[in-house]
Image 1 (cartoon, helix red, strand yellow):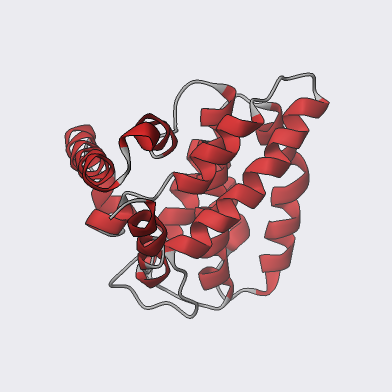
Image 2: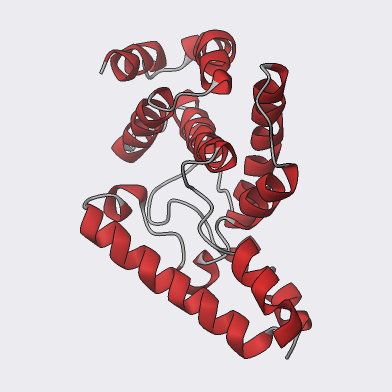
Length: 209
């Protein structure tokens, strides 16, 4: 019982593999994904700050480091399924949030429960920090899919993941998005030029959509 139970549960995130059920050259755990999202987010926030945007760093680190904690209870549901309808996505989020709340109420000491409810909540919202989380999360989808496409993985799900993540990112109005599209994405596409799959074509189609 107590916070020990929470600390012990974090190991479960190392065992949950992203994009289950599909052939992958490289497997990624939810735990590794969360770590990368934090790294992306802090650089994206630095770009925002360099453009005069105020960043709540405590909030940013809380929501990015814990944004997928609820997958301990429901696993990683495939992105095409999760986003196939707004109703299904809302239902899944409701179930996940309910199980997180139940875990906190059952295991976390009362004096810390408000903190855990704040930290483990869904962090994607209209705040700058929430939008940065959205971008960072989608960036990791891009890099995971890119790695598979670069290695010649012909699973259509990775093309869909790459394309949809890029479309979502370009719709978010942040300085860091402009920087990513202008300065980072071209390097990624250039690196993928020797891939048996035409990553440049997929990228251009996504950006034009």
